[in-house]
Image (cartoon, rainbow, N blue to C red; front, side):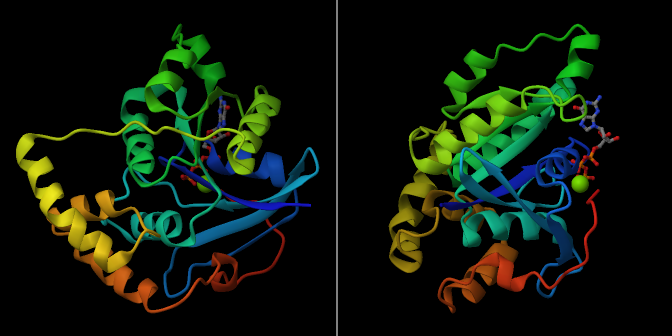
Length: 243
Ligand SMILES: Nc1nc2c(ncn2[C@@H]2O[C@H](COP(=O)(O)OP(=O)(O)OP(=O)(O)O)[C@@H](O)[C@H]2O)c(=O)[nH]1
Ligand SMILES: [Mg+2]
């Protein structure tokens, strides 16, 4: 039986924990990230004989280094490298929410985009062209309502496709201005030489150009250790639903 780690990322209040609780039921525990006062939760669920370890990341608007929450979500995706990152978006404010999805896709193509609160969007008369968004983003896109429990089967099927490698994402690559692309081109070989092929060099180059010293110090910390799965760092127990 395979075990796949799935990280739940998304803006605050997009229903990550509602979905997480729905999938994991009471098979979950909460704790703090190592050295950070950021609460996280882990749980387990099964679909088609595959076991998934779900990690509920803190809600963030970006993966820059504006807060401990953003640093924790960023570090998890980059350094713990979940098999799938599930990006949960609010269907009623897609434009703002897609910003985080684009940032995740700059880091990894092993992602599924989950458009939640589709019931609310319908009430507001918002219709969403899932196929067009999926084509543009290059990863599966599924509409669900975590509250009404609709679309969950399709979401789990898409998670499985990405987790097993049956679907290989071709994540949208954002092309920046000539000046920035020139900077990336100069920095990229140095970053690749330093961090190797394990980490997303283009994204790291971009963040370094932006003067992201927090990412730099996280890189130093994580590169000094071999692989250390996140679950070892989560010091928690107790059965509780997360919020
Ligand atoms: N109408 C509707 N409400 C939902 C749905 N999913 C979640 N909600 C509601 O949205 C609110 C936020 O849900 P949470 O699951 O706490 O959101 P979250 O993303 O975990 O929030 P943070 O942990 O703060 O980032 C709650 O009141 C949920 O009941 C949905 O599919 N439809
Ligand atoms: Mg939550």
